[in-house]
Amino acid sequence: MSLLIGAEGVRPDAYQPVEDCADLSLTDGPVLVPLTVIDEALTHRRNERIGLLLANDIGVDAVRDYLGSVSLIAVTFPSFSDGRGFTLARRLRRAGFQGTLRARGPLIADEFYDALACGFDEVELPDEMAARQPPEQWLRQKSIVTAYYQNGYGEGQSILEQRMAARKAAE
Image 1 (cartoon, rainbow, N blue to C red):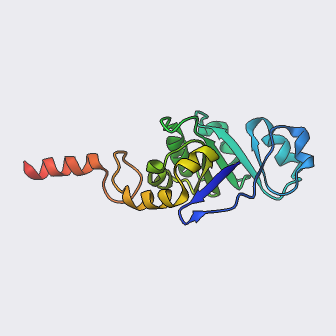
Image 2: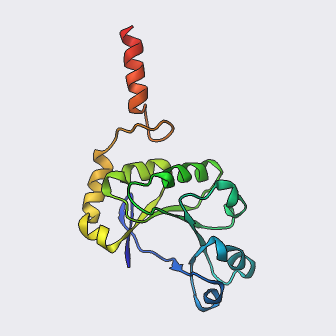
Image 3: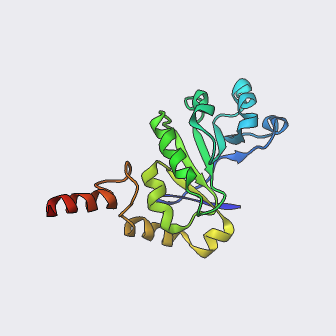
């Protein structure tokens, strides 16, 4: 089981994970499939909505052809300290993906603001992580953490840009 949380709070998860092609015909409703199953899912279109499950180290070029065909992309984070999924989210949005973007894995509440700023719409947490940091903590952190080091996301200037502007003004 897992907990799905968006900017507004906990939300239901309509997508059923499907690991192989044989299970596609056995599953009604929206499905979440890995790259190994996506072609079969799109070819037969048995399911009303199709989500694509990606590892955080996949390149956008490998999935570019699917961006207009899936309604959800879930990016797997192997650990909270592996930030490659944030970069992938930005690249997927820049490549034109308009559907729901989900971070999936053991993220921590401190990363919620960053996840949203990078383009994620929701975070799917394993139960053990949700038990340690309940939804209220996630929502509180979203509004507390507002400074960021990375350029290109969020509103306003990054910490680095602020420092550079202050140095230039002091000269």
